[in-house]
Amino acid sequence: MSTSPSAPEGTGQSAPALPGKRPPIPREIRVLIAAAFVIAIGFGLIAPILPQFATSFNVGVAAASVIVSIFAFTRLLFAPVSGKLTEKLGEPTVYVTGVMTVAASTILCGFAQDYAQLLLFRGLGGLGSTMFTVSAMALIARLSPPEIRGRIAGFYAGAFLLGNVAGPVLGSLMIGLGYRIPFFIYGGALVVASAIVFFSLAASKSSRLANEASRVAHNKAAAVSLAEAFSFTTFRAALVSGFANGWMAFGIRMSLIPLFAVAAFKDGAELAGLALAIFAVGNGAALTISGRFTDKHGRRLPVMLGLIVASVATALLGWADNVPLFIALSVIAGAGTGFMGPAQQAAIADIVGQGRNGGKVLASFQMATDFGSIIGPLLAGMIADRAGFGWAFTVSGVIGIIGVIAWLPVREKRGPAVS
View 1 (cartoon, rainbow, N blue to C red):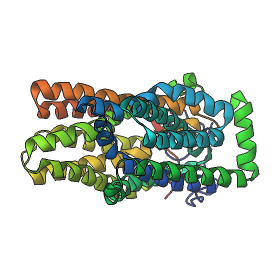
View 2: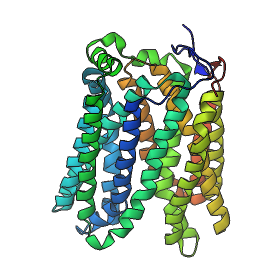
View 3: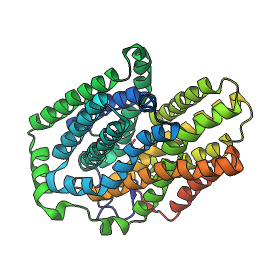
View 4: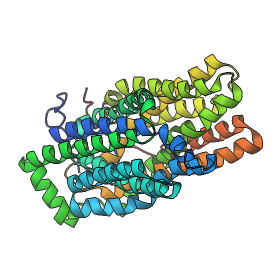
């Protein structure tokens, strides 16, 4: 089998017919990128409201935190099912069903009359979330031209990033509307987003999408098995680095960094929000170059470099004793995460390959990331209680370095670079 430029060892990608000339981003993927932005705006809109809404039902901080974690927990549990559904029904069907499930869950949250109902409805959203996440990743992996996979992964991640930044800003403008209205707004936006994706993909009657979707849904030979994926050192390394990234970027960033800011600095509450925002700034800055770098230099180098930077910054963050250093390390950690993200997504897409369905493979990768985001805050929080924030962040940085070590055995077969 031939390999594409900078393809991981063992992947079956065809070399580009015209080296140096980049193909356009497929229309279907552009639609998914636009939908990702809408979804992320809504998520950012309700994320700060959820814990406060939970406490309005006269529950404590711990119970309010469960409302946040139940979403990730149900994502983790349902990910294998999402992978199987994607292979059986095809990506477009599972994607639209998933988004509509989250829409229904979100609207129901707005109608919740007690804590138990809110917990149930929010957990239901996690099921839908993993459906559209896995199916979108599978569709992007299947339709992405090998020469621009890094750029596409960067654009997709950037859409989520911009939405997550814009969402809280819009949420702050809706404070006077109460807790429930933002849920209805987000639910309605999701209905619109799912309709746009459905009709856009349905209107795309090109033989490529129609024929491939039918073949993937009915021909099991088109699906990438987990056994095949695990035979690649790239996949095994991506699972470890995905876990580490979930621990640091999604778990520690959202849980421990705000608590550390409040405990360590005057006006820590305001600084906590600023830390999340400036992490996103560093993340976005790195995304502007990481996709192109990934397509030109391969997947291994940007994953390792980005994870090293993020790990070191995270390890030092808990020892910061002044605000400028705290802010600088937050920006650096965000930049490291942003630099590695597209490369890691592109590496998984390389394993799946064009024209194949990788639902189970992508679900497994998503599970590794979700597991890190769930267990990271729990274990790091225990360390912080017993030994202090400094050691909690240091251990988290060590987890990141383990992810770097996992990529050392990976070898990539290089062809001519695609600029």
